[in-house]
Amino acid sequence: MQTYQHYIGGQWHAPTGGGYIESRNPWDGRPWAQIARGSARDAEMAVEAADAAFRDPAWAGLTPTQRGKLLGRVADLIESNARRLAELETRDNGKLFAEMHAQARYIPEWFRYFGGLADKIQGAVIPLDKPGYFNFTRREPLGVIVAITPWNSPLLLLTWKLAPLLAAGNTVVIKPSEHTSASTLEFARLFGEAGFPPGVVNVVTGFGAEVGQPLVTHPKVSKIAFTGSDANGRLIYQSAAASLKKVSLELGGKSPNIVFDDADIEQAIHGVLSGIFAASGQTCIAGSRLLVQRSIYRTFLDRLVERAATAKLGDPMHPETQIGPVTTEAQLAKVLEYIEIGKAEGAVPLCGGVRASGGGIDSGWFVEPTIFGDVNNRMRIAQEEIFGPVLCAIPFDTEEDAIRLSNDSVYGLGAGVWTRSIERALRMSQAIQSGTVWVNTYRAVSFMSPFGGYKQSGIGRESGMEAIDAYLQTKSVWIAAGAKVDNPFVIR
Ligand code: NAD
Image (cartoon, rainbow, N blue to C red; front, side):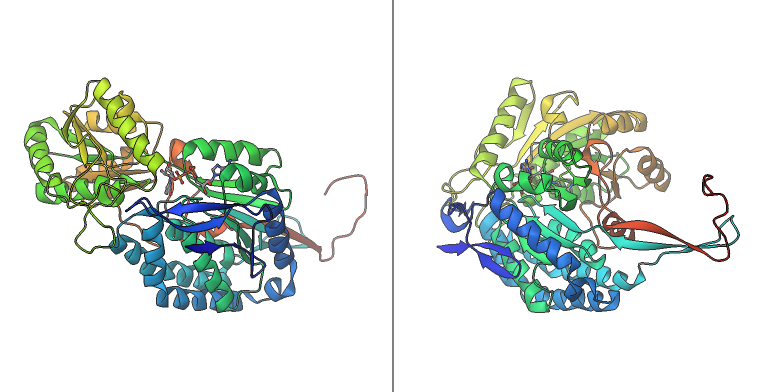
């Protein structure tokens, strides 16, 4: 069994408490690695290393162009290690190797994009209303950032934070999910290899309450960049408030996928299926509420159920597998519990609705792809994030109904609209309260396009040019150019 230590100041460190956490493979339920169980003392060591590195000329003295080149170098290393990193992720979270590999090959683009931005961070000369002064602004890094990530796409979601924060000149302590830390530790090693000075990128592993919380409250940390559940996001927001840290939150969703009767039905079926069953529904942007116009509701659902029944469940490493296990035993129990809640609320599973078994998958944590028909949007299964392969189908009559139902949610992360009408697509994309709207497609993301949540789906945006602003602060510098201090008791 592989053993992983913390990565602090460019070195591997055994946990000061001596404990380890087993990492289990969701495909067969067996432990395959153990990771350091971090404590407040480990958190302290990591923050001190990041704080020292932030002020060390080896990092602080680099020109922005040199920083950008380091990001380019790490991009190349990630590219050549993509297969190995993706294998680790699949072993840890059970998502299809094909998806993890595609992500690992795409990740370098974030480092190249933000590496390119590093030397385009510019202040301004302000044309002041006061003669006799010269005023300009500087855009400066914040300091030590704590990046906390979930288990569903560990490296991609980390990259959305890491690439802009490093391009801006900050240093970081990463706390990956206790279920999926291995790939992040191997990833951190590549930053050392690329030539990042020790202490710029640090990783401590373990449970949120034990090592995450001390990071969130540490006085030398400037900002928390968190991706995870809204319950923990809320807790972290509250804890960070005590020392007024900056916080960005990428949280959950209950995204509507809306099919109008003028849609390309075959395409819509594909989009709806991939929206909910890709990654076994374990994506923040899962299209977990299906709104279908009543005139096509029955036929659309029949075809959808027929297609869902053909999905191949199996070993996530196998290229023909279409649906893998869910990531943890606890998640399996949670998804099955929600299915029971749905049944108790009166929703009827048109397919699935049970733990999947047979065909050699019994030791893994599998759920049958499940579609509930005739769901009422007020039911718990339509309001709460399940984070599993469970789709709630809801009929609607008019465009206004579709908008009302879509927005009747505390979340606002993503939405899909399937229609051939450009006017309707534009009206819907304006009316829907969510950070992303996809028209006739679903789940597309890019390093160039901002991503984030409306309402309780989060605070802040990742990717795209504005993402770098979240890791910078502006300083205004005043220089007297002829102005004199005449009356010391009057503000100028
Ligand atoms: P989670 O909230 O359980 O854990 C996320 C991370 O927070 C883990 O590293 C965990 O150890 C840490 N943590 C927990 N409590 C903490 C505390 N008190 N202090 C500091 N750290 C703490 O989330 P999860 O179950 O790993 O991930 C699934 C959730 O993430 C879903 O809700 C999903 O929607 C969300 N998510 C959002 C996005 C997005 O971009 N909006 C992307 C992926 C996942």
